[in-house]
Amino acid sequence: MSIRAFLIKIISGWALFGGALLLLIVFATAINAAGFTGNAIAKTWGGNVSGLPGYEDAVQMFIGVAALAMFPYAQLHKAHAAVDVFMQYAPDWANRAVANLSGLVLAGLTLWIAYMLVIGTAEVRSDNVETTVLGWPVWIFMPFAVVSCILWSGAALINTFAPLETADGT
Image 1 (cartoon, one colour):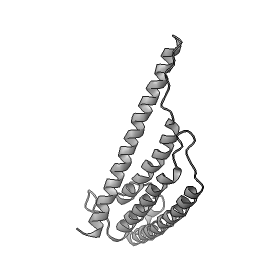
Image 2 (cartoon, rainbow, N blue to C red; image 1 turned 30 degrees about the horizontal axis):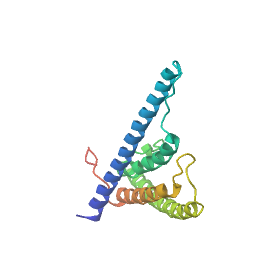
Image 3 (cartoon, rainbow, N blue to C red; image 1 turned 45 degrees about the vertical axis):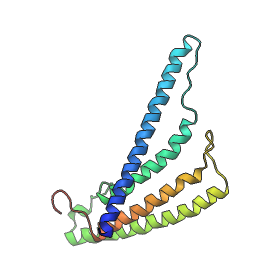
Image 4 (cartoon, rainbow, N blue to C red; image 1 turned 90 degrees about the horizontal axis):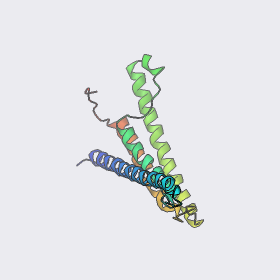
């Protein structure tokens, strides 16, 4: 298996991991909403039904991980936003040049973000930053962002040097 194929499998699996986290968030949100509904009904008889304690903390941490896990897959499949207003009239060689340049810039930028996240993770860990309600250490969620940025950079490099074939064969 080539490095490219291996990286594509890792990126796809990472996106599935992000999707699983999003499903967990949806499930927790449904339970929390049911708790609020139950509380509204229970109030009429003087009762009380609580929502999930620390729900906001968990969603805040998990949504950051889940969303960023999707970016490499979106980059790999060119499912990101692009502004084509001017480039649609440019010749093919200019489109290729801009695509290659932007891929290299994005790869470098996402590696820089990963580097800064590593530094930030160390700082957040040394400061003992925790979520407000649950008291979870925030730093344990940050390495997931580092991995996402590294995979995002890899996806940008794949698109630049060995792009996937699209449905129409281009």
